[in-house]
Image 1 (cartoon, rainbow, N blue to C red):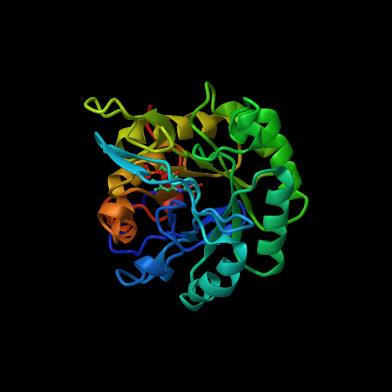
Image 2 (cartoon, rainbow, N blue to C red):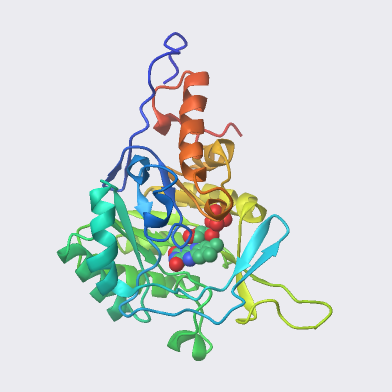
Length: 317
Ligand SMILES: Cc1cc2nc3c(=O)[nH]c(=O)nc-3n(C[C@H](O)[C@H](O)[C@H](O)COP(=O)(O)O)c2cc1C
């Protein structure tokens, strides 16, 4: 509620994301922040609402061959291919650092089958290796068995979203966030499927599929040929998808896509996101997420808003 009189009151930034208590609504997008250590020289990562890890798989992955990144107008295309240290190394080498920094951890997981997601979720849960689980059902850069059969990303098929979410839900009581792809006609279909299967929250959006070709060599600029587009170029698409999903589901949403500064994050909140994650901007400005957080606090003070949650879905149409 707007008080109109208490401009100097410190606003309440805390949120509840489907059971995950966050001290503020700002996290970082999976794959753009490593496992936190890389960024802790720039700021205290424990100040973030949560640290979201790079997608973890059962075995370490080397990812795709270079070139895996290419700059595009107002964004970038990546085809990293889920390079990650694997769950064992995460548990032994990365987790202790995150815990020592008192970070709230969203452990992002990726599997090649529902069984692999289940195994990863079990490990995260039983080892206390995350405060929430984010299931990446939407990575565009891996060639798995499903795609080889001409299938699609898991989250392009609402039935698969339901099947995978239900399977993961059955093995963990941790807050479960399902991360969806924007490469669909209607985001409300996978969003509703995730909610029906027991997801506690959604993360929208992963990258948009894209292709960049070098005109001189006539070759694709990425070894994987296609990649995922991220950065400011995708922000209006992401904000619209959050707005669409917000009106379809009751569970909270993390808004992601091209957030560079506080105003961008506030756009997502106004569209209906409860939390936001800063992604590609971390590469350009390593302390971007903390600047976004400070900017949100300034905005609340300037507008004399007591609770950040008052902004959620508060767009004036
Ligand atoms: C280099 C790179 C690596 C990424 N790796 C992952 C990943 O491992 N798991 C995941 O769920 N999303 C991954 N993403 C997607 C981001 O988490 C985010 O959804 C997307 O980039 C949109 O946000 P942005 O425009 O702020 O970057 C990656 C994105 C980039 C740019």
